[in-house]
Length: 328
Image (cartoon, rainbow, N blue to C red; front, side, top):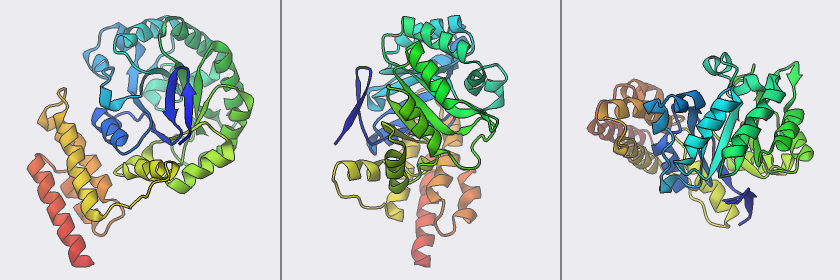
């Protein structure tokens, strides 16, 4: 097994779980770590929300042992607020502090945060310097290929981030304008890797062991990060981990899929910050993802989005398994 180091943090060179707002919550991160994700990152945390003592923002900062190694990811456009936010994050003892400069969502971009910072490398550098001045852990930066097709500047941006003190960078191979459509560009990740001496994490369109190996081989990146391909599929981390650890991987049966779906819902329900109503509401999309691609999944989608209790979920799994057995 190979390892990489981001500052003083040692990580398996397998696959990490990408930060995904409203998806990769604590239950999701714990589950993916149990299946072999080598590293997790929190949902997006507002630096101003931290500074103004927003309760929900503070909840996002809690790091449990089951999620480690884990980064807290903060965003903002003001170096002073980012510095103060980073200082607050230190009290939650993350392993790494990640700065989001890649989020394409309008409510983030319209506040000059996220991927909007790719249009202002000087401000981005001041943010990294400010966060580095207070952080007790390695600082990384996640960004995109560029702002638009006419403004592709990931290589130059990565060089500025390195000069500002970033300990590693994560590059998503799409522009802000692409959002999550089209294809991720591995060439830009390769170019960034060739341009900087700090670790480079490649992100975008890794949806299988094969595409993970392609990302490593083609770009030379130090680590691969997986996002949407893990929806209803934490098994992808086990397959990749088994490959690099020379272990044997057995694809999940439909019974195993339903077992893990129910376990995932139990994890969501077990989080103290969520009552049953909120937890089950959040579990609905996950339930539908575990069924995706299987016979009759479309017909069960409405039931997934009507789940109210854990018993509802158990009956859903039983009926879905019955359908699979009848079809086989």
